[in-house]
Amino acid sequence: MLRQLFEYHPVIGYRFIPDLKARVRHEGGGYLVRVNGSGFRCNHSFVAEKRRGIRRILLFGDSFTAGDGVSNDKRYGDLLEQKLPNVEVYNFGLPGTGTDQHYLAFQEYGIGIEHDLVIIAILVENIRRVAARYRYYYNENNEHVCYAKPYYELADERLILRNVPPAREPVRELALSKDERNAIDRVTGSPILRHLVFKIGRSPKLRRLVITSGLKDRIQKLIRYQPVRGYESPDNPAWRLMRRILEEWIRKDAGHVLLLPIPFYHYVMGISEPHYQARLGEVVSSTGCSFHDPLPDLLKYPREQRRRLFFERDGHLTSEGHAALAASLQPVLEKLLETPATSIVSNGLRKNSQQGRSTPQEAYP
Image 1 (cartoon, rainbow, N blue to C red):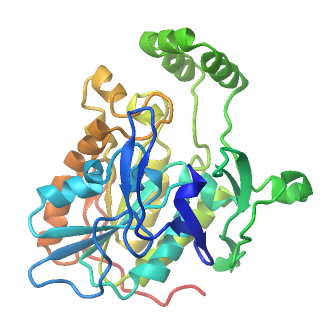
Image 2 (spheres, rainbow, N blue to C red; image 1 turned 90 degrees about the vertical axis):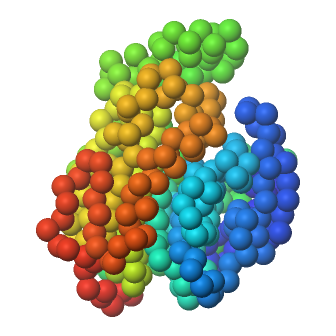
């Protein structure tokens, strides 16, 4: 994530520079970024009242939702807006953020905006970001620097917001305590894979060979590689925190809420087991919210086409990937937007016995 596209925000941590228009260089050939006056990469200005006859979706997520790698109109949220009649999508996606920061964005900007549906798009990696207090970014000088982020803690199952406002300036990792260094969001993996990635990065020929031969995928499948381990147990501290954030958010909204997990390449290529499904099912059961997992739909594509859904190096969705995600979501949203507040569970989870949302409850402080 390029820090120079963003400005400091005292609650969320940062947002896009309001009214920014820029072309970003990328392996896909570059893409156009257009930002509204509120500091989000959305073609709409955020207004409180809906126009007559318009259905409005508030969409929250990270870089996969904000659309790193593709221009605004190629993102799945914009494609859905084009496909669904009389629907507008307010995109609140922020690259490099976790579900905790998305919840803060909802509280700062979403409450008070009339809407028919909130979509909480959860890149499965977000469980790591929720548990983190710091994260590395590239600044305007292309330096890898560490910044503090807002975060929640659980105390007797109650959410406590910490580190607001976060520091404006980057922090030196060596100046942090051991506990704080352990709370830095890092991308980790097996030693075999780290060595393989290092070799690939040094040799373009080897990189092409590994990609075209499928060697990396076979190694990952052989060692039962799991890119995100926090979902394996319902008692994992990171999952317990993320679950509480989701439950509070869903209960705070008075209308439809749809949970949308966005699977990694590893799940779409059949390399790793999608443990996130069982964990998010717990949230569906406790809140009665709607749920759609696009993974079964994506797995129907031929293997070579599935590869093309993701950029080779940075791993984000290509325009083809956004189109596939939009195609999976379209029938679900058509059903949700035409019906009263009832729970819809799609692709992989049993329908909850509750018919409709849980009664909205007072949010945890």
